[in-house]
Image 1 (cartoon, helix red, strand yellow):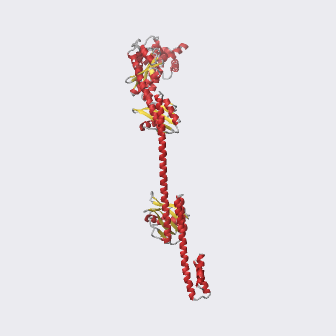
Image 2: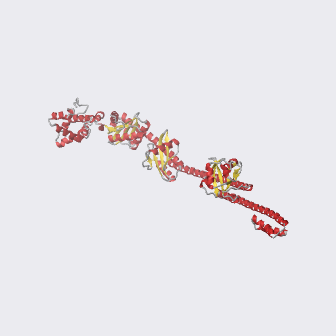
Length: 627
């Protein structure tokens, strides 16, 4: 066989990428045809050279594939469409180029100090995909700790690694035997490990280690670029948010300033709290209510408020800003530690600046009103002092008319005793006098009011109730009718005695006139309405006797005269004891339950005595009592 023919045969084999076994064909044919030993030797040399060329071509083809994969990876990194997609592509290419059964990537967890599975390709075990490797444990943990590539042809027979039961169980479940791992490095820092593994024993060549290391370098760049890109995006978003916040803040400040200008202009033109509330609702929408220092509505409808709203108002005063409770915005202002006004806004527009400015404007309006009221209160107080201490002074009626009062109309004088804050009580009394076109004056432990009307008892009870609520401590009110300016002083003395009598009777916080105090009223009242007292105490029994011709009044007198004994009463009246019992039962129905009680019995005995005297005597003119 000629040399050129031999070369052509081997070139044909190389051209069609024949397997290594096929290169034995020309030698076998030569031997079969009886070629001499020299020819056979030449063929052997040609075969060896051809196989070298074949190996070289295969290595170059593999290198071209590796370079192509690295080029594609670099292209993916340049686009960086999605970090997960890039990492998955790198792991997939590692598995293909190294022709392994599995490829995977672990990343470092700085919080837990270990590595965790980030991407896998070819894995079939859930336990393996969830595996975490502590630093230095297993092949991956050793690579992460030392930053050096490691390869093993048989993992379970390799003693270089710290075998841990949970790691080995996961590797066995995946069926891995041969493993290669290279570090993912950013500078001197290892951020993870890229690994390729086979389910059968096989060695890993240096070219494969270098290829996997190149892919790992690309993966590290991808991760770092993604981090930088995310940080850039975060910075841009923060900058954009800061710009939006600054713009919104500027707009809010401008809108608050415009609203403040509108409210100020309203006040200067003589507007009130209702006008300020209208501006707030016009700008912010929703509904607004304004409360005074007692929590009463000055403007708007508040409905029923729970204790939490008042706690929020207290917090608003303490913090000096708006407080939210549920769907309410609450802004409250105080003066000297005492609440002055509270604004309650229910709106979707939570611009706290406008609400806080509105609260300040309302507070100023209330302070102005309070100053005017205090000035008017001083005038009214001086007039009331003169009516009490100098009833005959000239010009009292004219001074009253200038304040809108007609002293010739029926009036009631009320004295309210209290132990609360003197200034608060005086302000409350002055406000009541202004609202009801009356007079008010404050003393050390009492306030005095002269108000239109003729129901002394009812007015005393109302004053006691409302002043108690304002002071949060008992206020006890006594009242007396004041028919004309001349008897205001006498009415004051009687009302004062009524208030003192209520306190002495243990009825602090109550209100009454002399007529409501029973026999005590006879002692403290200047009018001494004896017939009225008898009628209130014994009227039903007297009327029953008059209609039926019975002797209930006499039976009642005999009953008390015998010490409350029905049998002795029967003997004294010469009637049967059952008759006495029946009469006492009728008396109980007419006078009501509890009539034999000591205090009530005392009033009834006094009324019986006055009735027997014919309604003409008073306690001051009666002789010694036989009750």
